[in-house]
Image (cartoon, rainbow, N blue to C red; front, side, top):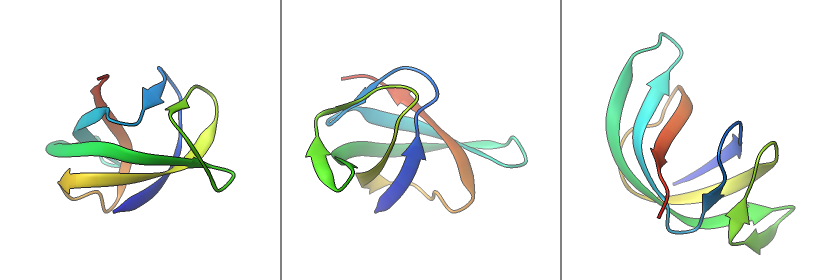
Amino acid sequence: MAAVIRLGGEQVSVGDFLSTAVFEDDRSTKVDLRIVMILRYERPVELLDSPHSAKIELAGVGGLEGARQLRGCPQ
């Protein structure tokens, strides 16, 4: 699964895990996702820091439809 993100906090890296999706109505749900690729300007990078945007590819389990924020823990 792929998503376009704008990073607003800490940096993220390939291999980081995401554990929570927060939705527009402020409800949250647990997810089990890992960042497998970060593409910035269509080029792969290992690290993304704030306030940059990129396309990320995720592997794992969890519904992201309508999610406005993903939270996790660094590698």
